[in-house]
Image (cartoon, rainbow, N blue to C red; front, top):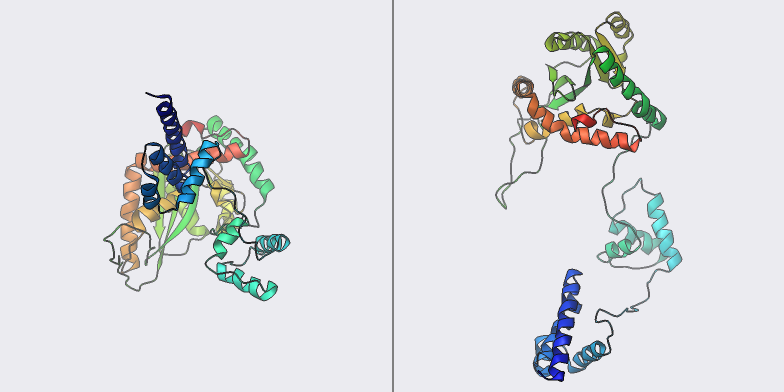
Length: 364
């Protein structure tokens, strides 16, 4: 092989290596340039390369010259047209959108603001790209509970719950997380797979009603107990639930961790709980902290697994169905434990955030 042929082969090897790098970076234009050069060094006629890649001969010569002089083959920086909106006005727009985050901003709103306020005209179709260049993105808003007391939440995670689990070990308490949830007869709709182009229609009987569920869940064992009622949950029904829970669990000591619902703290109920102290303790989560209660994930699982895309003719039908669901859960606590494993991992990450050792590490 002659020296000239060896040089050509070395260049082709370099180009193929560059091609892989451009493909990895998804730089399509640079990949086409490199492939055109590979064809050239493999002996293909420039006239054929020009036709295949729909370029002119001058462009091909530029590619060859850049490669021979070991200049980069990717796109050179382009100046483009100057922006219609000056830099200081771009910063003003970004700051305004960031500050006024209690309203909805879509492309047409930005278009109106730019047109009326600054007399600048952009295409509505181009505006999303322009806003992304400003460091903005289009995403869904989320609720935040502004009445949360972050200091009380910190104290709960770093002190209170650890003390409760220390008492559990020392005095043989069984700790249950408790909450109430309501289920509607018209159910909830969710995404599901189905034939393409066909509507998935859920029969709705036009009946509106609610069945409430009072439940208690024990992390680790997966033990769950729930009581259904068509009536509004109040302190009297909550006390009845506590008595049924003790009888059902057949245990001497129950510690219930609840939210701050008003009926949980009714005066007469608090006095009654004090008389039951040998076997019953009520502890309360920090206000507005449902993320500290793992039973919330159980409610979401029940709704997604058993109630999405369903409707019932009457409250009685819904109550019967929910009773069947609860019987399955109570008979197979292992399934419930596997469902709650992700919740335990989430709680462990919360303890990590508060730089506190988690009492649930052994359960993960």
